[in-house]
Image 1: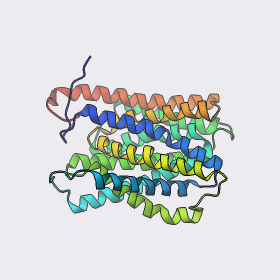
Image 2: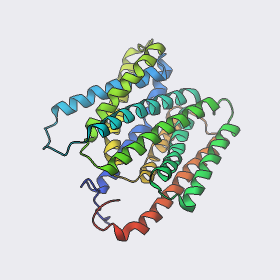
Image 3: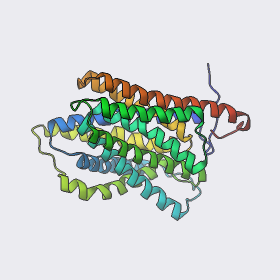
Image 4: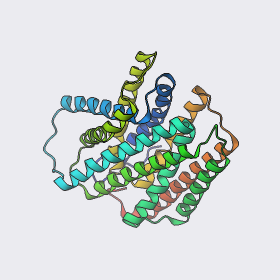
Length: 323
């Protein structure tokens, strides 16, 4: 059964952008697992790991950009808006991934990932409401309440061995960076303007590297480990798959897909991360962890239902393009 091939304002099929976001979500779900392995076999910290992730992603993307055929001349983005794009994306990237890696180190892969991606959609929905007047609706309000309830259950009900408040706070900070980056990308996408997703991502990695360098240096940029080859391969993987590939696809998709829809597709990240944590790392899912996690995921599904109803109401007016 085929689905309608709607086209976004940029001319790219919506289905292709949804696929980009899905691949990015699954790839991101493996980043925390790779970080957990790095922490187990070396003394590299989250800020240094985030720095190397940005540097590695930047190097890989610059190589791709150098080999890619030159495109036909496209409308240039105004310099002021381009500056806002690269600075905002770079700082948001640095906050998002550094706080996430720190959260995984403090409170584990499952809780760190689920809180980040559970709180993120709520912050995105609230930000979209303030910025563009996107209505939350009954489902949206219930989703916000459910997400808050999930966070409370995780913090208050989890034991010190499974849920640490400091780790949850870091995950919420990561969610704030993710939400800000998503809203900025969507806002600039609404305004239009010829920005190339891969070039934007490379700039974001460059800015993120500069921002993280002094913090990573203070933490220790070179890992002390008895398994340098394994650490090296893990750093290469983090730079290539959940970074260079995932962020390029994310920026391309998020620029033309509605913010709430982006947050729903990104549910693939906590789901894949949870599966990896339980099957490969043996993390225990206690009752409070399962309950809080379920509330967060159900909250995001509530946003999905609210998004679907809103899309159905708008469909008669969107016959040729737009999402």
